Length: 371
Image 1: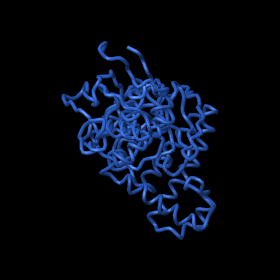
Image 2: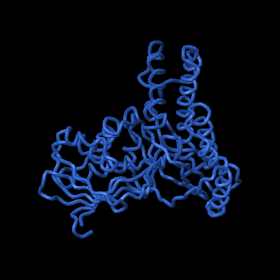
Image 3: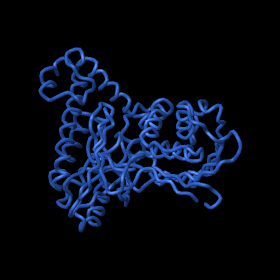
Image 4: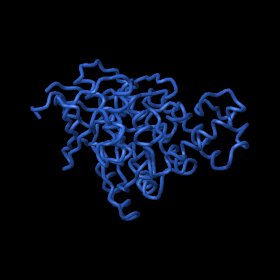
């Protein structure tokens, strides 16, 4: 890649716990991973961003003056949206050639879209000679996801992709953006990432519907309580006012309230190195995502059940937006190979799908290298 000037990457992410509460203003516990989107970039002296991919034959040229017109692209729409939001924020966009190399599996729940958006903005800022503000990049990438790609997401994915630190888990307050980095000391355990390999799309799924349901709950409860976001709702307040909510919305709120509490306890478990406690919280999180938030589905449930049935696994749950994608499991390190084999075979028998496992470390978010 010597013909390019910079190599700029941004990370995919896992989320230990705190699912579907980032857009409710809750605290979440993501970590950047070594699966990344990498952009090789050089200025080209034109008014176009020329896109190519290491894994696709497609080539796309984006007119810098018409970035709003590429929403319908099959490939290149995320890059166009990210560039547009960066441009609208007053940043100069320089014509360039971008070669994109993504190792985050698409549709996996590991935030390939956030990695693409964040790395694209970071690359554009780098060749324009701008100092990098990782939080600002994350916010503009989130804006691209919401306004251009049409997924009404919270800030967790983009923040983790931009601001992750090697061997650290973020305790991110999605309401204030205050972030504490916690050391990830797993002791005798390892995190195993498994993909159920059922194709899914957050736009086509009910992700936005869940967002609307929690927004409805907040509107109703704000008439009775002094809260600015749903994550501020205490369990006692929920019990006092749940009758004012429809049965469906009530279940969504129950997940938010209980998941926020699980994040609080998980923080204590992680700081104390109590992996058994953390594992139990992962199991409870999945149960709530299944029964209260209803975002799991047959395949993720089968994958989690196969994991949880093994004594070497102390916790397993779906991560990401849901309706497919990946699970994470806490597994005794000396049993990982046997765990994968049993999970693969059990899941295949139950669903007909072949699970895929990813070896990935906790990594830095944005990384820039001059070539």
